[in-house]
Image: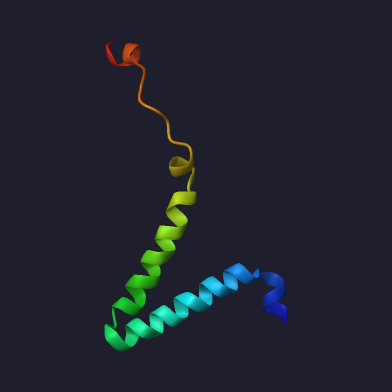
Length: 66
């Protein structure tokens, strides 16, 4: 299968899960079919961004008292 060679099983499971969530929300609340999977993708992607991974500690006290 061509798709199986391009993406891993984790990505296929994630996409399948998001599609099923979108279908469920389409029956319940149509805008939710777009909002909820988008929010899940943001929740998964934002912590992987550089500023979230390498947080700097508080500034040294001498640097704040200029």
